[in-house]
Every structure is written in C-alpha cells, then in structure tokens.
Length: 337
Image (cartoon, rainbow, N blue to C red; front, top):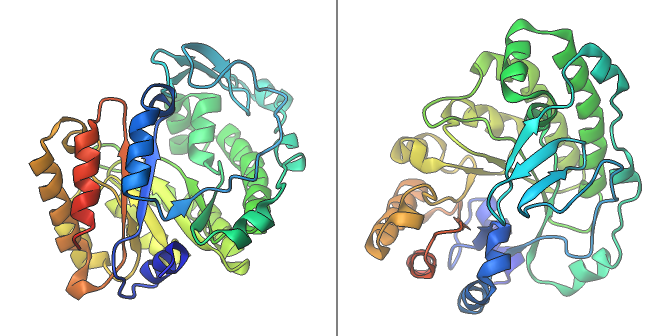
C-alpha cells in the first residue's frame, strides 16, 4: 500500500495496515536541529508531503526575513516582532485602525496572480506520497494580524461595519486562493484558523456559525468540486464546532485534542471525520518521559479508532525543546497500532 493509498483509505475510514505519518516542525528545527530531522525521516518516512514545485508570488508588502530575530512585514502588510530565532513571533502594530486605513488598504492579489507551479504535475505523477496543498487561507487570524485581536473581538461582538468589510475583502481573496490550489496536481488542500483557548472557543459558537461557517463551507465546496479532500487546523478547545466542520465537509481535523475529553470525542465523532493527530505538544511531547509519550499515543488510538476502524493520522508537531527520544517513541508506538 502506497502512502497515497494509506491516507486515502484513512480518510474514508477503511482499515489500513498502519497509521499514515505526518510531522510538523517549526523553522527553528531546520535552523538548528536538521540532523535530527533527517534521522527521523530515515527511520519513519512521512506519508503526507507538501507541493514542493510551487510557490506563491511575491507580495508588495513583504520585507525582512520571517522567523529570524528582529522585525519583518508579512505578505499582507502586518508587522511582526520575532524574539526567538525560528519561531513566528507576534504582531505588535496593527495597520488597520480606522475606517480610512481600511479604505486605503489593498489586498495583495499579486500573491495569487504571480504564483508558480513549475513541475508540479510531474512531481505528482512521480510520487506515491499523499500531496497536500497547503494554502495560507486563514481569514480569522488574518483579520487579527491586520486589526489587532482585541479590536477584532470587539468588532465581531458589535457587528461593526469595519469587520464586515474586511471580512468580505479577505473572503474574496481566499476564495480565489482555494480555487487556485485546489486546481493543481495534489490530493488534498489545507487551511487553518486558531479558534480555541485552553477551555473554550474564542468567540461564541453562534457568532462563529453566523460569520465564519458559511465562508468555510465555500472553501470546502471548492475543494470537493475539484475532487480534493479538505484538511483543517485549529489550535485550542474546538469541541463546540467539530460537528459543524463535519457538516460543511472537512475530511481531516488537526486540533489540540489534549485540551478536550478525547474519549468523548471518540464516542461522538470517530468514523465521521479523520483526526489529523495530534499529541500534546504543550506538556507531554516537550516535557514528558518516553513512557508518557507512549501512553498518550495509546490513549489516542484507543479513543479514536473504534473496532480497528481507521480515521487517525499519526501526526505530531516537533517544537524547539522537544527531545528526539520523545518523537522517536511516538512514531514507534504509533507503528504498533
């Protein structure tokens, strides 16, 4: 069974001979621990890969070097401050503060208009991996970067016209973004927005359903119309909207399961959506023992794979302080399922 077949069967909740593997890393790992990444790749080859023969066009706003100490300006004009080499940093100076700022703001359409897919068709044909088209579709977070989190939350609660206008501007861009990536040679497309705190959704589920669920459904519809699976990532406690994500067509969900009642999630959602990982990257992976890691893997597989039914991807995130031994132990334990 090829990697592609393995992932496709997992997304269809069919039995597989092993769980498909996926690994996320922060840029810090490539800067400082590349040898360890190479060792894991040799020991446990990944089944899901990105579109290597692709890059977006260069934005008019982009300045500086992402993930390096200091400041940089991202593709949409948000200014970031990085305090740790290899980590994303934070937006410290929102650029849309008034209605006039919004009037003057221009969406960087050149990112999509000048995108390059050189060799992607051949790369797809020559690979037996599951190729996932990673978009940067993330409207909720993008609005936070541009307006500031506190201001955005106030505007959502008060249904401010600035929020409504920026939402529509970004949604128009994201629809074209999704259409672009879903039309390429890949098996699935991914998008994201971090919706959860440690204990709840960041806004009310009712507001999420009113303002964001319809947008997300359009993204899913575009992907499915092109024959592609939909992968969605959201950090934090997201239980309140998992049923909604299933309803609109998300095929695989990556979320912080260890913030929630994993067993209850398994009872309610196993067989309805594929869980795209993940292990606890806040406590267990970085600071637990290898025994802790193995126990957490067993907890996930026991809760989320009912009666040997598939639907779980062995995904984890390798953060800056996570020891090699814990990553190795996780994939070794996943391989026993």
